[in-house]
Image (cartoon, rainbow, N blue to C red; front, side, top):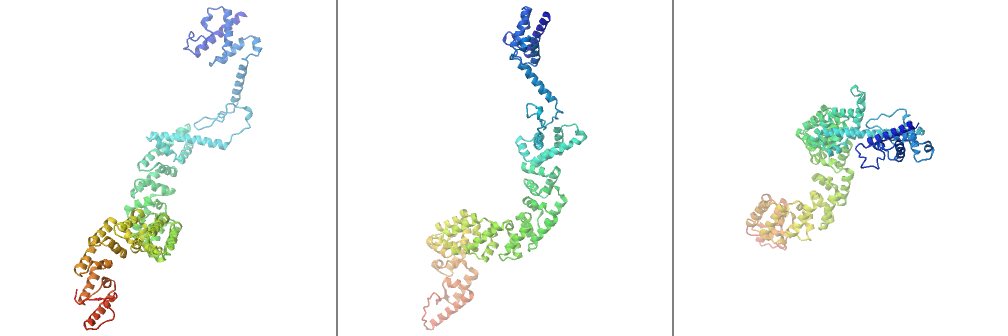
Amino acid sequence: MLASQLQLHHLSAVLLHQTNRKAAPTTNTSKFPHLFPISYSLHQHQPQALQNQDTATNLHNEDNILRTHNAQSTALLLHHLSPQEQQNSHSPHENRPLLRRESKEKQLEISRVNKRAPQFPGSINANASSQTVNSSSKSEKFDDDGMLMKALEIRRKVTVEIFKDAMRKGKFGITYVNNLVLELSDFIDFVMIQAASMKQLPEFSMSSYNVRAEAFIDDSNVVPLIRWLKHNSLSYPQIGRLICTSRGNLNSIRRLAEWLKLIHVNGRFIGVALTRAGENILERSLEDLDEIVEYLEDNGLRRDWMGYVISRCPEILSFNMEEVKFRTEFYLNMGMDRNDFGTMLFDCPKVFGYLSVEEMNQKVAYLKEFGLNNEDVGRLLAFKPQLMICSIEDRWKPLVKYFYYLGISKDGMRRILTMKPMIFCVDLENTIVPKVQFLRDIGVQEDAIGSVLARFPSLLTYSLYKKIRPVVIFLLTKAGVSQQNIGKVIALGPELLGCSIVNKLDHNVKYFLSLGIPLPVLGGMVANFPMLLRYNIDVLRPKYRYLRRVMIRPLQDLIEFPRFFSYSLDERIIPRHKIMVENRVNFKLRYMLASTDEEFTKRVDAAVGRRRSFEAGIMYDQPLDSPDDAVIENNAV
């Protein structure tokens, strides 16, 4: 009995020694004696009984240190070798078998689960959320919808990573790939569906989901298509939108893009045309699109303009042939010829494909309320087609009310509309109101502002700080116009605001100053006749030369009547001067020129009669130098 116990003690020492060697095979026991209290070599130099006693004692003392894979088997052996009274006593080691027993019970409960859930990329382990499995929780059920959504989200993330790997193999940058994936959510879902359906194919029946997803992405040629679209200047939002709207038919994208190049759509406008032409554009046949292009070309739209029109209004490609014909006839029926129709489409392609038919009819009817007939509206739209894309409620009606407040009549509004239709397209608060307020500030009378705008509508299209204000400052500082007269000058001649300071106004001012006219006097002449500064010097010079050398008139006559330069030299000045010379009479420039031919003839006959009566000795009570009568001159000029 004693021999058998000694053998068991010796066996336990050997096992413990082997355990320590396996746990730390490279450890030197001489350097770490406190970690290896029992050594097989020490047993050879000690008595057998002492070795057994020390072994049992050291094993119990070092039980807390053992952390190797066979520590539990060693603990069981030590528990078997311990005396009976120690086993029955309440030692601190009696909890270990209990802990091991609980661990076994847990493992047993796990083994009793019916079937282990299959593990694959994107799957969810129902037991992963809890560290222990409680057999009594069979009544608890997982939320099927929540679990399904979570599984789909995980599968989507796996698909995204597979797509990113395919893009990186295609030599795309990381940033570009990440930005593009954000635009391809629908395509990622499409890849998931197709990869799942490929499980039914014999060649993929035993393949994993990753293999099937990679195979589908490669077969779809989406990566080369993305590179081709990027090469054609498409941004990643446009590429993502196209791929998602193609519904898997990626070849239709390349086919339509090549067709757009044939009609002269190039550069970044290919992406604009593809994304704005409508979701069904990828499903349309090229024959239908060619029919639309040929019809527009037959009605005045040149072939080399087609790309520009389609680029600015791709919605045209979404129309069927009946709607294209209806919209074309809508403009042609207003008296617009085919050349004007083609020019209108080139100037503003949105008038054809941006508006609905109802909106087009409403705007034409509103324009006719200004007194325009159908042909007038056609000419107006051919000249300024941008009118059709302006809102009636937001743009036209507030402008008409403002013009009515300024005293502009309906005829004046029609004049503004026909002469400068762009005014009905500009912003009222930011463009028109500040210029009207500026006219008030410089002294233009309130009742004259409406007539100024109706007379010169282009004033409202000029820049206030780059055009209008500089001209007013020039008139005040360089042309001699006083501050009291500047409002009068602008009211009488608003066309001055459209003249160039460098090329027109400055040259005219220098010319009149060179004639000997003082600057303040010139300012008074401009106040009386503002158009004086608008004439070409080549027109002014012959008239002045005739006045001074032929008519032999003083400069004062020109100062008193600066409107002299407004009359034609060959048709008005020279013929009337000859009549005066032939009849030996002389008038002031005002009475000589500012009258009709009939009035001038009566005035000449009256002057000749008075001269003859004077020569005959008949005296008149009315003085001959009355401002209403001619000045008699005995000798011909």
